[in-house]
Length: 138
Image (spheres, rainbow, N blue to C red):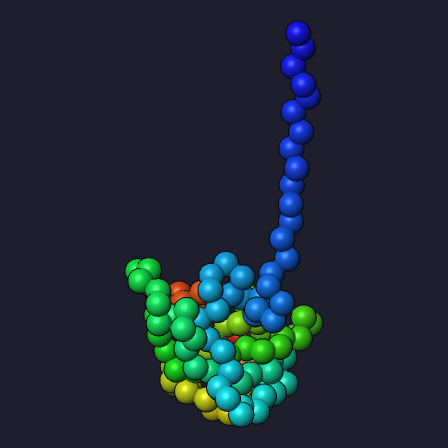
């Protein structure tokens, strides 16, 4: 009596529709506030909105998950400075060059001041965990 051949089936799941790309590995912890307007930061290639925590953030008990006020990355130009340095859709920017930002307008204004003369540190949350990148205009 022979053995039947073994088959392995791989299923690739796409992220849920509308879920920001940066939050694929965790629940979406932030969303745009009601009646928010998107704000462009063309210098770095981002579109931002004012953010508020979602119910998923309220329910989490995982260690190291942070809650901040800031600007949610809605869109990112794949050829822009922010994308080249690793920022992603769904990231929550909460500090630019050492200055806390609580709205999309504040974040965009600070990001648009990036110069070629020096690095600008941008602090952000991805999946509730803190990260930072250094941006410098070319």
